[in-house]
Every structure is written in structure tokens, then in C-alpha cells.
Amino acid sequence: MAIDRDQRYQERASRGKYQRLYRHLRARQSQEWRTSFSEIESILGFDLPVSARRYRPWWANQTEVYNRSQALAWSAAGWEVAQVDLGAETLLFRRKHPESYRKPVRNEVPATGLLKKLPPRHEEHKVTHNYEQQTLRLLGFNFIHADIIEPDRGADGMPIEFMPQSRSPWAGKKSLNPYGKGPFCRFKVKGLPPTAGVYALTIEGAVAYVGKAQHLAQRWGPQGYGSISPRNCYVGGQSTNCKVNNRILLSTRQGQRINLWIYETHDAGSVEATLIREINPPWNDQKPTG
Image (cartoon, rainbow, N blue to C red; front, side, top):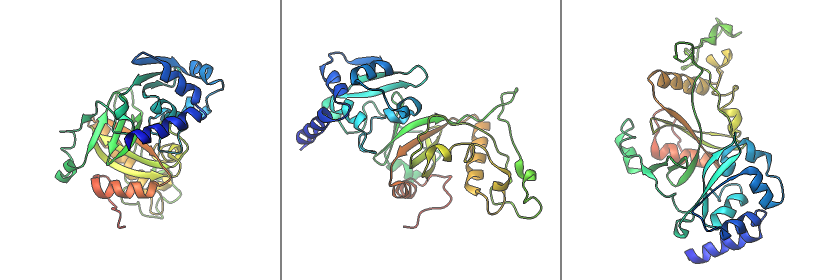
């Protein structure tokens, strides 16, 4: 069955939009290939889409999401993307063993010991990281590393704190929401796609929060978690924004590493519910009931 499946993928790749890239990789004899976006375009005979230069997840090795014909081309040829540098427009392809196709990525590092801050029942779930290729596998879903969350800092190196409540027209008229007291921070996340999906925050390697979004870039932009508006601090505002932003600030104060991972999918609600129910991240106060 596995051979038949791989043959079907190879047939699709050989006829697809990125067939020239597929054939080029099939013909290469090396174990690695460091190349540039412009060289890829020369092989293809057409320009890469704008999203290839803006969003790192475009180069993810997942083939099952959004009919990713580009990933199908290199995966069916027996290769995977190991590194991407959007600024320099370069990437590194690495050959993989044929039997690893569409299985968990190689050289995964078990997160043993990284989940010690979570409830004991988390240890029964497979949570693995591939630090070289920046992937996080949660219950069979391959999340792609989006960015390190790094709040703005002052001259003393400490995160800059904000208390925007007094600037709200609701000040003195409404009560603060349960997370509206603050303090808050500001941060920027670059390179997120304008697509639906699920995101996960890890603190020192442990999954702390899982959420969904119809537009990942907006959710983590200045109108979302990245900057708290005054009115969001009050009842009727976005209390979840306040909660996540404040906890990012507190974690940063403690010198903890915060990473954002994303999984693009149209079925974000179902994936989010499954992960919250099974992993039970500590920042997810509201649990799914379905």
C-alpha cells in the first residue's frame, strides 16, 4: 500500500505545476542542495508567488494542507526543506529516506523533561520537536515554527510595560474584564500567512496555549495579541487578548523562551478542540465541551 501511495504522489508531482522542480530534485545526486529563490524560478520557468517571499510556512513540508503542490513536488522527489531564510531568499533542501515520506520528520527530539510544568497526564501524548527544521508535532499535527515572541524592551533590557486602561472611553463607566488589569507589552510577529489555522504557544518547550484564527496574521498583529487597546481591558472587550498578552509579559520577565507555532487548516475549530481536550494547556481556561 505504501508503494502504491508513493507512486500516486510521484505521478501527481510529475504532472503538477512544480513538475520541473520535482524532476530537478529527482536527478540530483547530492544529499543537500543549498539554493536561492531566483534559481528555483529559473528551474520552474516562472516567478514564485508573493507568499513564497513573505511567509515562511509556504515552504513547509506539509502536503496535505491547502493542496500544497509545491511541497508535493519536493516530497515526492524524496527531499524536504531544512532551512529557509526569507531575508536572503535562500533555502536548503535535504534528501530524506523514501520510507520517511509522509511520516513524522526524522531526527525528532523527544520533549522529555520539557513538559514537567504541565499536568502529569500530558506525558502520555507525543509532543516532539525538530529543532533543525523548526517543526512541532502535536497529536499527529505538524506545526510550523512561526516566530519567537519577543516583547519590546527598554534601555535596561527589561520588557516595556503598558497600562492603557485610563485612555479608554469606558474608564470609570465599565468594570475591567478578568484580565484587563494588566500590565501589558507590545510585540511584533512577522511572516504569518493571511489564512485560517491553529496556533500553539510553547514556553520553554512546553505547550502553554492553543487557539484558532480565521486570519493568523491579524490575530497576532497589532490589532490582536501584539498590542492591547484601551477598550479591550473592559467588559465587552477582547479579554483573551489581555490574558495572552499579560502572560507573555510575565513569562518574558522570568527569562523564559516563548515560541509561536502554526498549523494552517480550514478545520481550525475541530483541530483546536482536539488539542485543548487532549493536551489541556494551562493557559486555556475555557475547555471545549463537544
